[in-house]
Image (tube, rainbow, N blue to C red; front, side):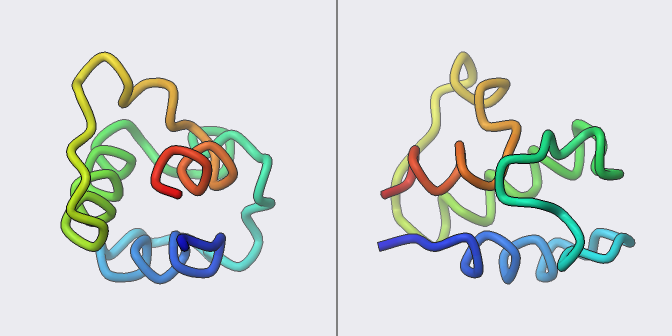
Length: 73
Protein backbone atom coordinates (compact mmCIF):
# COMPACT_ATOMS: atom_id res chain seq x y z
CA UNK A 1 0.00 0.00 0.00
CA UNK A 2 1.27 3.46 -0.92
CA UNK A 3 1.34 6.06 1.86
CA UNK A 4 1.89 9.83 1.85
CA UNK A 5 5.39 9.15 3.18
CA UNK A 6 6.10 6.92 0.15
CA UNK A 7 5.10 9.82 -2.11
CA UNK A 8 7.35 12.23 -0.21
CA UNK A 9 10.24 9.76 -0.48
CA UNK A 10 9.64 9.54 -4.23
CA UNK A 11 9.64 13.35 -4.39
CA UNK A 12 13.01 13.48 -2.67
CA UNK A 13 14.43 11.01 -5.18
CA UNK A 14 13.35 13.28 -8.04
CA UNK A 15 15.45 16.11 -6.60
CA UNK A 16 12.82 18.80 -6.03
CA UNK A 17 14.22 21.85 -4.26
CA UNK A 18 11.46 22.45 -1.72
CA UNK A 19 10.79 21.39 1.84
CA UNK A 20 8.69 18.32 1.12
CA UNK A 21 7.64 17.94 4.76
CA UNK A 22 5.67 21.21 4.55
CA UNK A 23 3.39 20.03 1.73
CA UNK A 24 0.03 19.01 3.21
CA UNK A 25 -1.40 15.73 1.96
CA UNK A 26 -4.39 17.47 0.41
CA UNK A 27 -2.50 20.52 -0.88
CA UNK A 28 -2.14 21.19 -4.60
CA UNK A 29 1.46 20.39 -5.48
CA UNK A 30 1.85 23.34 -7.86
CA UNK A 31 0.73 25.73 -5.11
CA UNK A 32 3.55 24.36 -2.94
CA UNK A 33 6.40 24.89 -5.37
CA UNK A 34 6.37 21.94 -7.77
CA UNK A 35 6.09 22.66 -11.46
CA UNK A 36 4.57 20.39 -14.08
CA UNK A 37 7.95 18.79 -14.85
CA UNK A 38 8.48 18.02 -11.14
CA UNK A 39 5.06 16.37 -10.98
CA UNK A 40 5.74 14.39 -14.16
CA UNK A 41 9.05 13.16 -12.68
CA UNK A 42 7.22 12.21 -9.49
CA UNK A 43 4.62 10.24 -11.43
CA UNK A 44 7.38 8.44 -13.35
CA UNK A 45 9.05 7.56 -10.05
CA UNK A 46 5.75 6.28 -8.61
CA UNK A 47 5.18 4.19 -11.75
CA UNK A 48 8.60 2.64 -11.29
CA UNK A 49 7.95 1.90 -7.61
CA UNK A 50 4.49 0.42 -8.12
CA UNK A 51 4.73 -1.06 -11.59
CA UNK A 52 1.50 0.71 -12.56
CA UNK A 53 1.35 2.85 -15.68
CA UNK A 54 -0.50 6.17 -15.63
CA UNK A 55 -2.20 7.16 -18.90
CA UNK A 56 -1.37 10.73 -19.98
CA UNK A 57 -5.00 11.75 -19.45
CA UNK A 58 -4.75 10.87 -15.75
CA UNK A 59 -1.50 12.72 -14.98
CA UNK A 60 -3.18 16.11 -14.53
CA UNK A 61 -5.56 14.59 -11.95
CA UNK A 62 -2.61 13.63 -9.74
CA UNK A 63 -2.14 17.08 -8.26
CA UNK A 64 -1.89 16.29 -4.54
CA UNK A 65 -0.26 13.71 -2.34
CA UNK A 66 -3.68 12.28 -1.44
CA UNK A 67 -4.64 11.95 -5.12
CA UNK A 68 -1.37 10.14 -5.84
CA UNK A 69 -1.84 7.80 -2.87
CA UNK A 70 -5.40 6.99 -3.96
CA UNK A 71 -4.40 6.40 -7.57
CA UNK A 72 -1.50 4.08 -6.80
CA UNK A 73 -3.16 2.17 -3.92
